[in-house]
Image 1: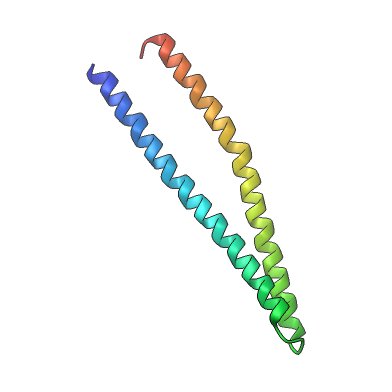
Image 2: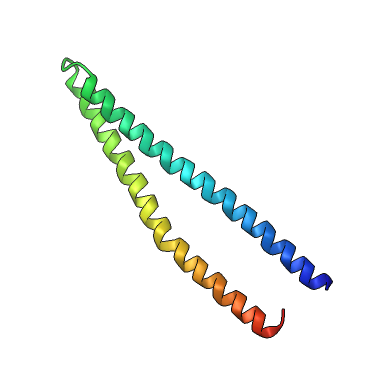
Length: 98
């Protein structure tokens, strides 16, 4: 019974840690997207006198949009495979009686 309770506690801690990482990642991606959209808004509102700064804002916002999109695509590819791996491990442990 002690081994089972230790394993349950371990899975609970891993779940809490994964949830914290997911919240941190989502917050980071949201802030990247918000920063990029703010830069686009500033570039649209800015006067046409400083053309170099407008180009810099547009390029920076494009890079931020691309980075956040890349992170989202990567996480959508990785997370389902992690879930499948955890399910396989859980089934194996269930069959082994652990």
